[in-house]
Image: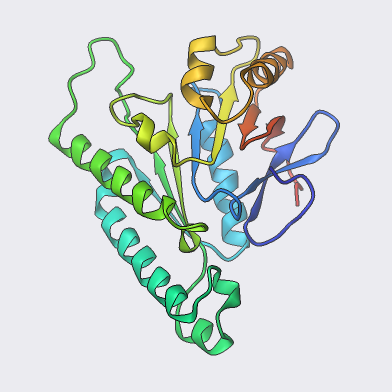
Length: 243
């Protein structure tokens, strides 16, 4: 969690109750899961995140649920290409490559946002996974496996947006690849312990997550969320002038 620095890979999310800035540190953890009930502001939060990434020079693309199938293989290929270049120079970060190489190769950070992931999976009587959904799950798992093996994922960052973690579409081996988890919270309604455990398992101390979620709900205003990346922060998003 980054509350001060404004490096290229540190993207502003909002501010705490005492107005301290809260940022998403993609240099430490490459991939992010955003969860929350409908109407809690996930779209607003992710739109702000995409705008911040654009301002930092990222290549940002957004795809909805299974339509991401068309770009994930290309993104995995891009990660492979970048890693080969890094390996050939014996470095882990693009910043350590010679200027001539950076000029010839596009090493700008990349962010792929998958909105409405597993859409409809949480409705009563939801149908079994379609073949297309299974292919998306396989592509996400392969991408997470390949990039998790690299310290900084070659500057390629995945953001998955969903109502809640789904054990079929996001099994434990996929959840383990997310170093950042954000949950948007409805005013006056703290998420259940089961929801918190499913989203934040292993990310932070359960008591810290529960306390932050209760505080976010008690704030009584829309635009409240909690971030866990090893630490836990409650913050308000959608605030102009975070940077």
